[in-house]
Length: 197
Image (tube, rainbow, N blue to C red; front, side):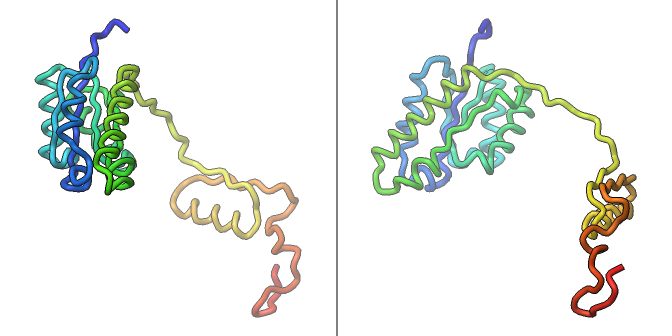
């Protein structure tokens, strides 16, 4: 890799959700010792606008080309942080997260030392992964605005009608010579006992 790595690490206290159990100051000090890390910032709520603004400012100020956020679950905030780094001009795929809330503070609430050690390991791992991240571009694929419905039973016919009512061309394919599926084979339907055809 010819690019000189400049990694920024952002440690979130998440109010007391993380800081109530994990020693965030110790995590920040440890992150400063990691290879390629040029900036470490601790924040009370990194996902909030002020925290995101700190990330954007640090990307410009320290010329960061990788960002690691140690906070809560990526399930909720990964899109938030990817958008944040993109707004700062960094490819959103040069971002990595370490989940130190659900994986550390919430599962080890009565053992500060072990929760902190586990969080330290997760941050070190995230920084290691960040070294290998590469810029990615999302592909766009043209979509044909029509639908294929396979099966001309009651459900297939209803789906085809609703799609057509929404204004899209529909192709209904049925392997039998007539529509209706199982319903066409019945002579009466419950509860009215009417003819099914």
